[in-house]
Length: 487
Image 1 (cartoon, helix red, strand yellow):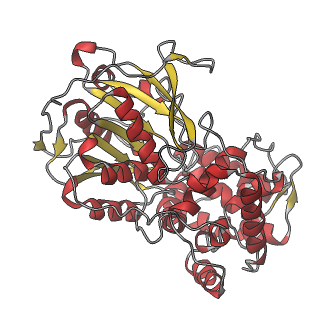
Image 2 (cartoon, helix red, strand yellow):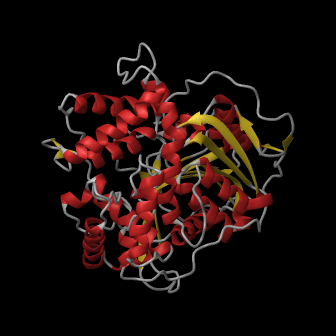
């Protein structure tokens, strides 16, 4: 469940709205799907699940099939039902299968009245033919999955990790590893739409899911009803995943002042400094000290608190301002030469395999060369908080397969059915990347920029003005006439 809104009501974003209320002219046909009670416990008793068989390889539609798991909670007022609302998860590697019972219940009543809430496990994830590279525990550490250079800036260890992970995926991932891609996820969703007999779909797409929503809107433009892209990354078709990784540079810089203000606030039990200006050098200095003198951390992965673990904690804590205290507690402990209890372990094997496979299959990455060393060096100098990680080498640089199709280019060709919502300070999908998505969509989209901090704007880390604007669009089809800022 997303956290409850703490924001007070703010001024409305715009006086005029564009109305998109034309009814869909076709009635949904009975779905040839076998819906039954979901296996997971603790779900809303109304939620039901099904599995849809789709082609593993869409160039061979009559060939091998895989099952993709879907869930739904039907619209709460059948008389007001408009269609289905896809809850498209982030990632790659994320799931929304349980979200009709979770985040979906945070939606306003008029939205829940109008839509069947649809969750799913993307291909390769969870209950949808899950993939697994068989990675060792050490390679599942976040400081390995994010390619942090060595303290001296060397990337030799990152190259070795990339090759080791790629070899494991090629050896253990199975045939489906070659057919994980954003375009195929979009095709799976359209197969589901057709199986339900729906003419169009609406979607609330978050983070990487926003890219999925944009790709769906590009591949199937006239199957879109009301599409919300929440927290979008740079859709540059020549870079895709590399652009998302690079976005951490700007995202950390955009977010750090908010953390510094919080961490220097009088009365904060986790206060780090007297002034906001002192927080940045404090964190950088501590990271440098931990590079030289790591602190043993039994039970953690890796089992030491080093500079890169601290830097990774900066990224993790910036996803949500409610996580600022996690970083502050770690800083306070490390300054005293101690560590807190290790974070709980998670089984990341499936998530990592699906994530790596999708990013590497979406677009070709440059092969290992001196360019990575040069870009890492430039990044370390310009953005010391991220220490070169966002421009470093990933498994995709040595991926054994070439993409099976060109990357999808997001364009303005199609109906104007898209609303973007974006926080100004987002560590994962910074505003600069979302503006590139906005530019690519052109006349098809309107963008709501929210004066808030954290990843995930709608019903999460945004504000009341942004939430109202998105809710109104989903419930009534009304969008602002032009791009607006919710301050």
